[in-house]
Length: 153
Image (cartoon, rainbow, N blue to C red; front, side, top):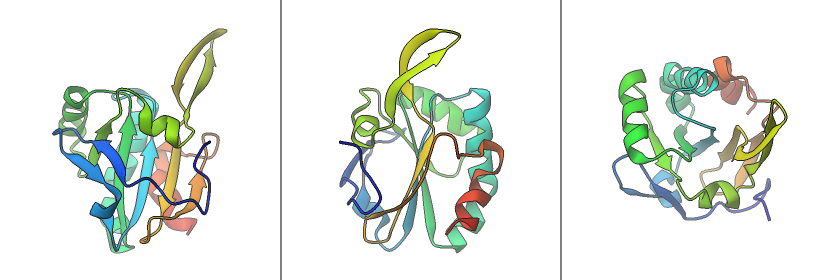
């Protein structure tokens, strides 16, 4: 069953680009913009990450922390972070456990070919760990995602 608005987010989120376990309680007292994206270094995912990077100070001033999640491994994440100077961590969800918990790992179709992949989705989690808002796959504006998070409080 996918996580919905009003649900408590799981405590253990996964391991970041440095192999460190990331927990929901690490963000206590802050809102968390937990964003799921398909793949490092693709055009849409890069635009989204860079929007969040460019708006990071404003997001922090508004009480948010940012955490990205994809199926890419830690090595890929370290390269992506370095190449684009991302100021936030990325979870290496190689087994798709967290993506499945949040209901964003799904069948997709590209040029008639069906495959499993991540649905670009952002979950806004309150200071108490409750999902307050979901910005779904058809709603995410990759080039303006930081502002989208801030304006739709």
